[in-house]
Length: 250
Image (cartoon, rainbow, N blue to C red; front, side, top):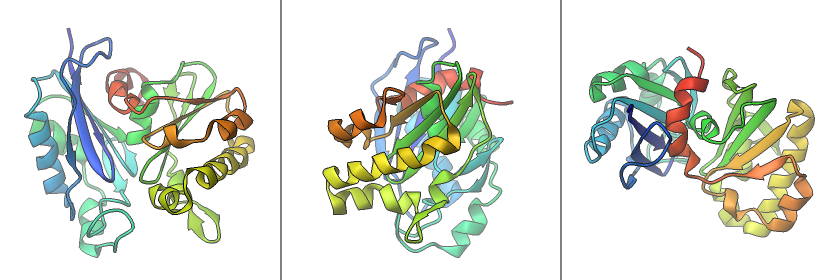
């Protein structure tokens, strides 16, 4: 039986568990706050220490925010800040993270084969049906995005950094900071507006909305989004760690 160490890295916290081949957790999840400032070396050590609190696994899957291509970090907007999301960017951290081969570094740290993807992509791997065009949006510190076509993961789009209104990016327009400022009712209306704005762009067969804040969408707004929009549990961010190995591009 192949076991997988699955780690879900967010802007505010990092959580992990060990899963069996069926995606069942074989250990109680563990969580630590995301430390800041967070250079790559501290990131690797934090994940190694977190994995050390769990049973040994045969492989590892890590989902992290930002643009990740073939396990290499192109950009990670949260982790280049001095004190976490929405704080000042540290130019030195930008340099350290750009081009960082996270897959190789973490494979060496864990001592097992390791897959590193955007966190929304791992989340999506835990929920997609594998038929048609399926879009996954995760709502948390910011906005995560993953696209699957016939169950195959498409190249990542860092939708979170695209401008949406008033010069704001999706991250700032519907992220946790705005949810707290607006309250769930008004924020839920924004989510519905975003969904309707993206519908003609993707023309999905199904849209899955996950992440820690998905449960805060008001039922009346969800109902107006249509039957092709589904709320999925946040645990998919860890459970997807198993299935990601079969859905991800080489």
